[in-house]
Amino acid sequence: MSKKQKKMLVRIIIAAALMIALHFVPVQGYARFVLYLVPYLIIGYDILIKAFKGIKNRQPFDESLLMAVATIGAVIIALTDSGDYTEAIAVMLFYQVGEWFQSYAVGKSRRNISELMDIRPDYANVERDGKLEQVDPDEVGPGSVIVVQPGEKVPIDGMILEGDTALNTSALTGESLPREVHEGDEVLSGCINMTGVLKIRTTKEFGESTVSKILDLVENASSRKSKSEQFITKFARIYTPAVVYSAIALAVLPPLVRMAALGMGPDWETWIYRALTFLVISCPCALVISIPLSFFAGIGGASNEGVLVKGSNYLETLAQTKYVVFDKTGTMTRGVFEVDGIHHNKMEDEKLLEYAALAECASSHPISKSLQRAYGKELDRSRVSDIKEISGNGVTAVVDGITVAAGNTKLMKRLGIDYIDCHSIGTIIHMAVNGTYAGHIVISDIVKPHAKEAVTALKAAGVQKTVMLTGDTRNVAEQAASLLGIDQVYSELLPADKVDKVEELLAEKPEKAKLAFVGDGINDAPVLSRADIGIAMGAMGSDAAIEAADIVLMDDDPMKIAKAIRISRKCLRIVYENIWFAIGIKLICLVLGAAGIANMWLAIFADVGVMIIAVLNAIRALFVKKL
Image 1 (cartoon, rainbow, N blue to C red):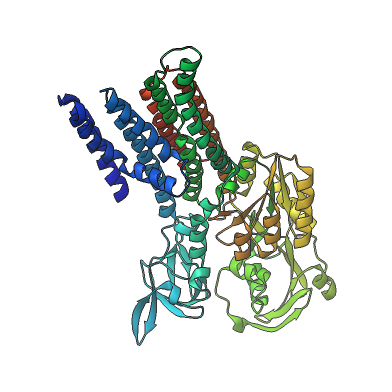
Image 2: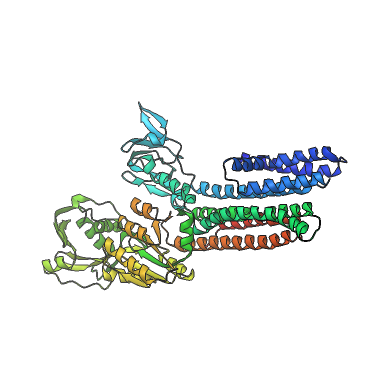
């Protein structure tokens, strides 16, 4: 609880205690008025100041003016009629109780976001004259060498020059397992160094680092208003002056009609009281406060699940998503080639992998790297000689005095070696040892662990069509789409082709249905911008993709897409509940107030009670059920 909230709570308690105590003080007349004025000013002085400033700045029509006019009017009526001042104090008291609940709810959702985003480093360690000096991260430029000690946050993106450690990346990716990093690895700001001392050469300025971009996304999220919020803003501008003028008409016209048409006494007190009750009932606090709060809580709830939403307008669009289009590599697959199988081999798998890895040891190609990873042992290059790389075919080498060939079917044909075709989908490395076919190794891009479940969850969430767009070959693309359960797939696409396909899908879909595109690479940035809603992978995704996207998945888990849709729909459902509940109750109470059936106590419920209920309902958007 903030100092401001604590101060308000103290004011509420003191005012309530004084109001109750004054019931037992036998004082009448102006002395009674002065005594009751104390709790009234304690609880309401800031509202009166806001109302005065609004009039002074020629922007009078807000809830502060409504509260000020209604309560001052109630005090004047009580003073002239020797009545009870409790109603005036109670209106202001309960209004402030509602404001306190609203402040607490906003604070809770802010804390929810800040707990996730508690990744901003306070300093960076720069080595100067043999000593570590703590400097502001903003002062460290690209190419600088910084030192990160155990327990400290990595302040700026960079590459490890010295040291090995385990990094806690949970604040960035949601991944609970530490990630081992070594010399030459890239590290992102916001991670926590757990074990060893690291020397890092920075690759970006602090303002361009991962941590800064994430914080900027969250801090600016509330600046982009949804259609519902825009409606409420416009509604309040028209509604507030309308009810003020209606209240004036209610106070003045009936008494004049009674005198002129009926020849009766004007009964000013009754109609002014009704007008003041009408004003209290009409205060649009429940709508003005609870709708933005619902979206803010929704963004907070999503952030807590590792889904960064750049604005409430995107949350609203996401709720209407019926088409989801995926990139393949890096989005639904890991984007890392791995050995997927060894077929038709005449020797042990490990031995064949050893020959392949040694033959490819001089290459930095991803396929070569995948063979070396699969072998899993340190390569002794002294065992290899006479390496020849044949462009577009593969390599030949002499390993331990034995001739080894590793490559595609073109290489086998070139060497005149009979080979066996592979029916698996992926990159096929055919192997020949001493001129004899020795089998083939299948290398493929591995599907992410939860990718298939993610597609199933999307369909369960009401997504009507799933599509995959990829630059891969048709066979690879169709196999991946079939494995994942994706409805439609387009392969061998260039970045411009992806935009064209999304344009076609946008033209085909129903007008109210929204299309989301999910991607991670630089080549996905144009499509992310063109789709109704762009979703980027935040852990391994490119800066361009993250910049172009409207929503960022911090741990690259495609399961979070369905979760984000569920969060957005829950948020929108709460928004509409609050709108209909607040307007419905107020309309009923306004009619009762104008007819003289509702008194000031019912007005308090119609204003403050409805606001508190709406705020408590809005807080529900913070909490997300597990899939």
